[in-house]
Image 1 (cartoon, rainbow, N blue to C red):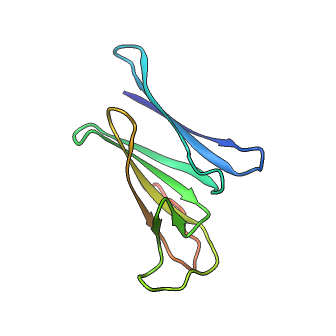
Image 2 (cartoon, rainbow, N blue to C red):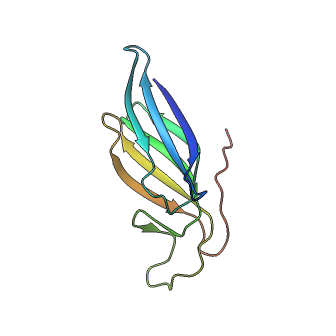
Length: 117
């Protein structure tokens, strides 16, 4: 399997991501995912193809404290000014359906993804 992850810009200069998963054995594109949120700056940083659990994980840097219904705020906390955080997005292996999203980081400080492999 081969996965290609990239960034593209909307006319309003906000970036989004795309992800395509290819099957080299059968020479076809299994699925292609576009970002769904033109109001959020999304920069893809890492993709993990988990063949054992049949999932695809994307690490995406975002410029929001809330993303697809998930947040970095503690329960009951008052929303403040947005800053950069990291979202981990899980997609199904077979159809590229988003299964869950986790947002990690601080509601005050800027956070970025670091690949320490």
